[in-house]
Length: 183
Ligand SMILES: [Cu+2]
Ligand SMILES: [Zn+2]
Image (cartoon, rainbow, N blue to C red; front, side):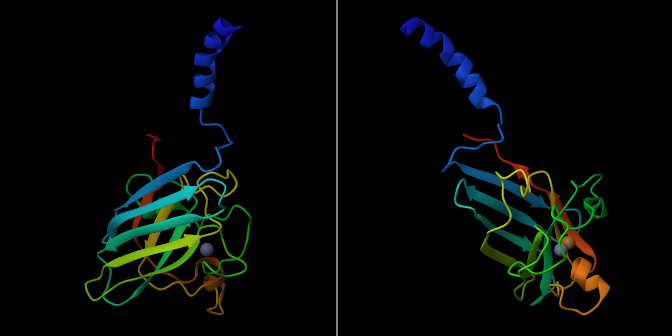
């Protein structure tokens, strides 16, 4: 039976190479977003170990105001023509109300605020339990990161804008989240 197993091996390898909906448990997935298209620029990296149900999000963004908070979200659409408005609204596959990253109810894309230092630079690292790279229902791959001019009020502002977008204001940087090839 050995020859037939050898014949199957290339076929199996081909099947495994197809990006199937099921990822292997423990597999390390990585996606990156090179923030541009506005005064805010930088790099955001998403890392998920499949099966852990959480994603590490870290990065650095420059070009922010000094000592300020800036809404930080995943939006629903990929960016086209370098225009951050093409990112559409917050990534919200479950039709939820806007919130903060730790709110009981939130959009999948609600990642709260990033905080800048005296030089307008933000370096951040946090773990999120909702954003995913492997779960087709919550994967942020090919969606966009948008950084805003103002602070996200996490839906607590008491008006309609707050419940929709957190009143985070203009879009000052954006990028498409791209899955990195496995080595
Ligand atoms: Cu946003
Ligand atoms: Zn939102």
